[in-house]
Length: 165
Image 1 (cartoon, rainbow, N blue to C red):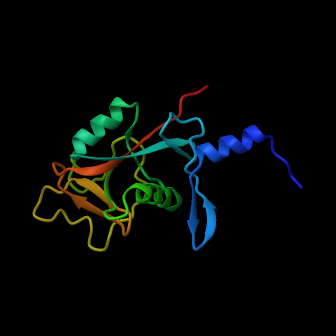
Image 2: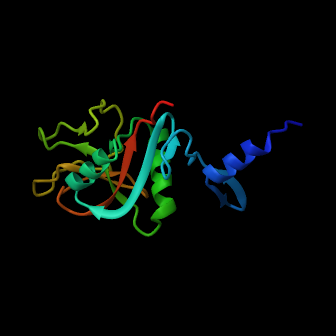
């Protein structure tokens, strides 16, 4: 039998969210790790979901003020993590801003943090720039991504790199 010091158990119990799925306990990767208080660690980055509604530019400014950017997503695993994290706070409406925009050049989607756009999860027929001016990406935790008008207020997800200790 493997034994762990009580301090390790308490740390995990405090920092990780444990939920019941189909009657079975599931430990999600919503651990704080080396992230600031209130942020969830995943694959070397820190994420925080904000339930207050801001337009895309104000949401990005809020994230920058915290030392990060609106979250970028680079693979399906990371996308699923972000969706699960938002749904723990927001079951009735899973729509939220991420950092993808084509405001610099129509049809050329870039992450606000400057990282490569190497993964997308556009809904069918998206992005479509319906009636023009849909230059920001809105994620829906129950489906995929949609291009939307940037001045509309939605909840949002920030990401940052943990500070070296």
